[in-house]
Length: 86
Image (cartoon, helix red, strand yellow):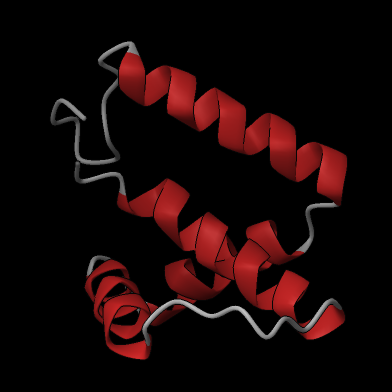
């Protein structure tokens, strides 16, 4: 889909939530690491840190609103950060 910016925000959210609410349910490490590595490669270190911090700062209601808006945007044929169709 190529939506790297929202993905980076979501990874920041996921890391923050897992630190606060540890779970025994985990995704396969290689799948998560591969996806996160691909997203990380799309940005310089400062931008990636900024995006993850934005996600990490979301409270639960704001996270739900953010995730729903991103899903709606993608399903409506929105654009990714590079301007390519999602």
